[in-house]
Image (cartoon, rainbow, N blue to C red; front, side, top):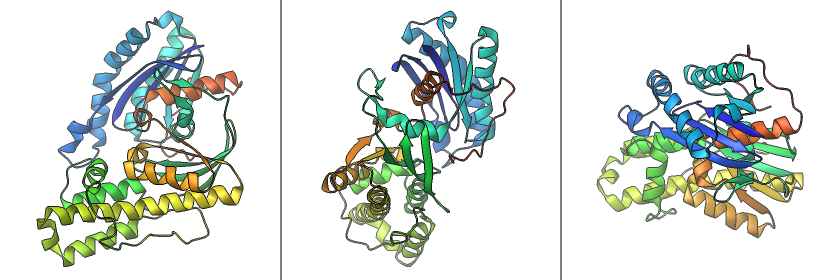
Length: 341
């Protein structure tokens, strides 16, 4: 099957072409520089850029894949969750394309696509579900932190989610308090590499709670009050690195501890992790070390597939078609608040 997928849930315009599990093309146009001036995503600007970029990105993807529109057998797009106006650009464009080509249309849950992205590996990327096994999956992005029990392919159960600030939000908000540029997460990761993670003791919210939910608002507030009382610390470069490392260590410890605890409780032998925050080097390393210590297999999404991309949308859409899941109506609406459960 040859399928074209579109992703416009936030600030990346992406189009991919997938054939029989292989990603023939995955073009991503990022808006990071545009939104950096404002210190965060501006929905109106994101929508305008999607409208401007979608057609050239789609043409580039088809050209790279050496596929014509007439060869496409299905069209897919992110249906939710995400920014409403941004979602609408890609979703309605995909519906129109499916209508014109008279091909099936599949609306995809953005987080569900992240859920299966660790099974896309290699160069060029190819989905391999032959070794698929039940797992506990950690999804960590800018606005969401989720733990999911994947019981079988396309069968999953939400275990827990964030009750306030997600891990990615905490990274970005702490970075803003320190005075680092947007996006803050990668900046904290970079500075933390040469910092002392044990210099400052910040709280690990909900780490000992029996449930699988997350909360990082208290950590952010703790850093804010700490900096209010010790503003002079930001004048020393090494202290800033230590501060970044200490905050990062708190976030990583919570994420890893709750993930491993859930995996052991459910008796699964595999852990997967995906989403933009999984690009964080300390998190990837700690997951690897802790999984090995507990005899768990770990599958991390490739860094190129951690941030928003159409490849994971296309791979999941193809799996749904192959598993005879219902297609999506061409009259369907976007679902900005669509929950994974």
